[in-house]
Image 1: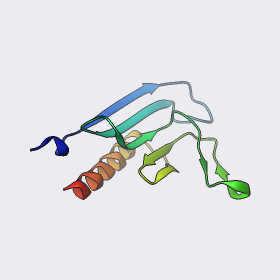
Image 2 (image 1 turned 120 degrees about the vertical axis):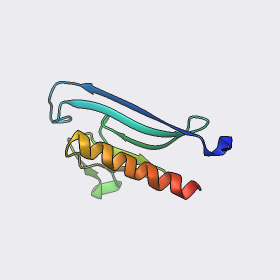
Image 3 (image 1 turned 180 degrees about the vertical axis):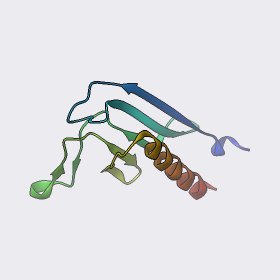
Image 4 (image 1 turned 180 degrees about the horizontal axis):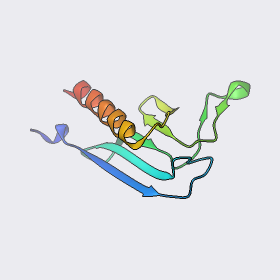
Length: 99
């Protein structure tokens, strides 16, 4: 295995007060990084996001979203188990592309 194939994952989850932004009562960040620490993928609810621009911009109260190379998109959080499954599915896709 060479250094180019090394990747690492960081998962941080904390409970928080239930709110409109975090209706499930969790603050979370799940990220995949390359060997030098650049984020390749991220699922988190640290901040709100806008989708699009101009008069057609979409906003949501919920903070759940996903960071990928193509940008940021909303993530439909269902439960912690599904979040983990979705994260690892995307990790597998990214790592398969790198082979």
